[in-house]
Image (cartoon, rainbow, N blue to C red; front, side, top):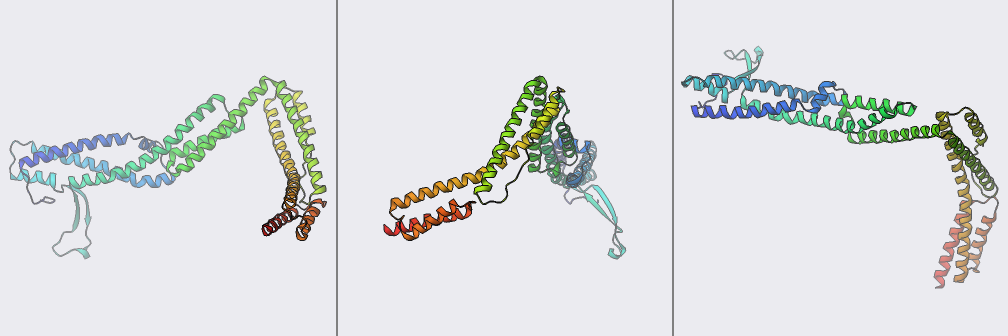
Length: 393
């Protein structure tokens, strides 16, 4: 018989094979049922995959379909074997048939016509592909991890994202989306949820972490803005007064920055420093207009944001100019320290040391002062002191 092995099983061997295969198939059935409920598979069935996920799922899906097909074939072969074994007495023909079912290749998978150029005169016209229980079990064992790896990866990404996104969505539902920042955040959360449902494997761990961290940060910022708006509406007069204080701080920062810049332009050789027009009066007028029509917390919050940004720029300009002034003072202090060191070491009156000192002092006194040239001169002076004092010792 086609697909029949050489050794014919005894009745005892037949019974043992049927029992063993039945146990194997029972375990496989339970595993396949569990696999069918896998969260990753549920997600892939609910949302047809796209992109990277579709590419990785295609071979895994084919493997899963083949597993179910082989499971059906296994069950059918075992049922045939049980039916044959149920006969009261087994003759040689029955045992041969059962041997073919249990140890041979009783299942026909496909028939393929053999081209005439590849046939022999008395050879077969078609090629028959056969498979048996052992081969089907081997195929299923090989296919199982291929399927599980993809499903586990899908579940891992989806679970990670949804665990983090769910609280953000709940918080948005609680506080509403009255602000543009909150509406934009809700849109991005929806987009990420769609992506993690349809193409989760396109999101690597680093991408997921970065996106979730950014969403959480923006959620905190937006919630803080909303809390500010509520506080402004609850105590409008205090909010307006704080804004006046902030405008006053801006006005004073402008003044300090202008003073420092003017001083730098007088005594230090430097590239033109940035000039920023004083907008404190403009902001004060806007605040007065808002105060006359209370409460407008969103407008007041936006005005505060603009003032804060302007104040930050003014403070940077002040720091830039003051930094140059501080650098000149630091160089003067360092030069004085080196002069005292030269005197203490007894080298200050040596001709080359004295000449180096006069060069540094002259550059420091020059208006405008070239800080880079002064730095080089003081460095030369320090090195010369070290050389002279080293020779003397």
